[in-house]
Image (cartoon, rainbow, N blue to C red; front, side):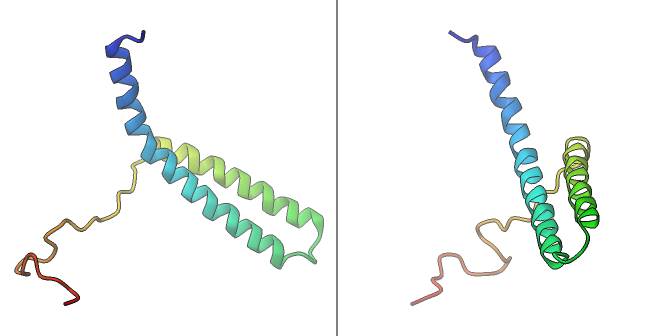
Amino acid sequence: MTNPVISAALVCFSLRLLPVIVSVLVKTMILLTLAFVLHWIMRNASPRLRHRLWMSAIVCCLLVLGLSLRGPLYKGAVLRTGGVPGARRGRRLLQ
């Protein structure tokens, strides 16, 4: 059996860490997709240049990880139910 205090602490820690992990994964995916597109554009370039591209992409991914753990987390704007002040509630869009 796990101690309930330890279990609650693990749940709290994981709930705080999950948005950071998702943020890092999305940013890393964007960086690697950009690197892949640039690699495809540079397919006739020298291997040395393409190697530098991939090494810089990997370094940037590590920087994203480090800065995301250290810096503030971006939280997108979320519209609440009720929406615009003064709008009628319960009104259907399609009648």
